[in-house]
Each structure stands twice: as C-alpha cells, then as structure tokens.
Image (cartoon, rainbow, N blue to C red; front, side, top):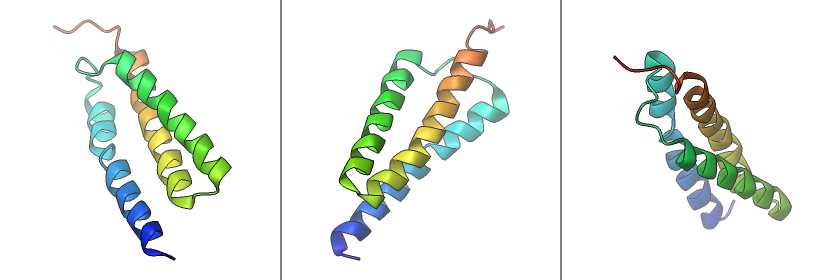
Length: 89
C-alpha cells in the first residue's frame, strides 16, 4: 500500500469512529432532542454519494469509511425519526 492509502485509511478510521459515541449515546438514552433531522438527512445522503463515488473510483479507503459511516449515520437518522416525536418533560 502507498502512503496515500495509509493516510486515507487513517483519516477514514478517525472520522468514522467519531460517530460511535453519538450512536451509542442515542441508543442508550433515546434522547434525540439535540439532533437536527435536516443535517443528518443531508449528511447521510452525502455519505451515500461518497460511497457511490468510492465504488466508481475503486478506492477502498472511501468505500470502507463511507460504508461504515453510512451505517452509523443512518442509525442516528432512524433513531431521530423514531424517537423525535416523543415530548420531553
């Protein structure tokens, strides 16, 4: 692997891992009051398009990072849609 591939995988691992605490907290607390549905919808769509681009380019760092990030962002978006209607006391 070239240095650029290692840089790509490292960047992908760090940015993808940054979503894990948000997903874990949201799953644990069901508190979605601070999550913007518009932002997560746009972000999830963007990540999906990056995944398609990575597939088209055959770039494994893009494919791996965006496949995992898409799963995590989709999870938060679905939790926001599911629990967003519950009124806070």
